[in-house]
Image 1 (tube, rainbow, N blue to C red):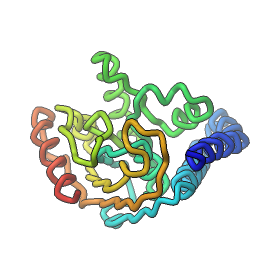
Image 2: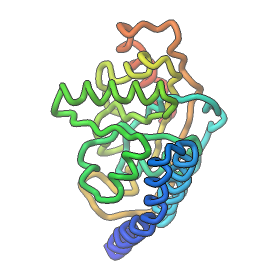
Image 3: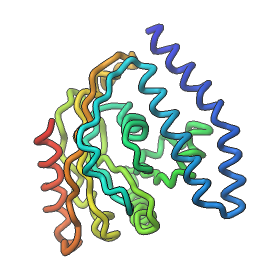
Image 4: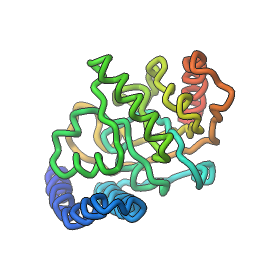
Length: 237
């Protein structure tokens, strides 16, 4: 439990330490210097996320990063095993990315502002109308060149097994006509088991499968595409 308390203190202090960079980001944004802004955002967020994961003692192995296109935006689609999935993907996969994230994260000061600048989209899964707006916003951001990450299960796994994907959850990739990058995360649920706030060291594999093209796939076929991507992810778990 002591390790967990120390980690949360570290989390807060590191987050506070990013405030000067955040002020720089705000200044660049106001000046319209978008490329410089986005570079600082990516470097700061990646460094912070990797540091948080490393502080737990976890060992992260990324396999298949060569499957990620260097140019253009993509939709990363991942299973969801634990609270550390976001910092793992943010810190250990180099391509800049934002997240389709639960609205509860908006309650954390500073982090909320960083996520907004990263072009994250906050979603309330209990509100169908707001969820639709969030997905449409995610589509717009993909078209603008900002890669997104989505966890189609909608909630974390209790034991590492993969759940069902929400129907139509990948429509934003079809509407934006961007590739889908399937990601299989193995072992992150051991870092903080669901219902337990104790942080533990664990071995985690992040397996990146080859891109799935969305060209010539109609929006009405989104459920079939969702099932196909889920099968790819599940096969690597």
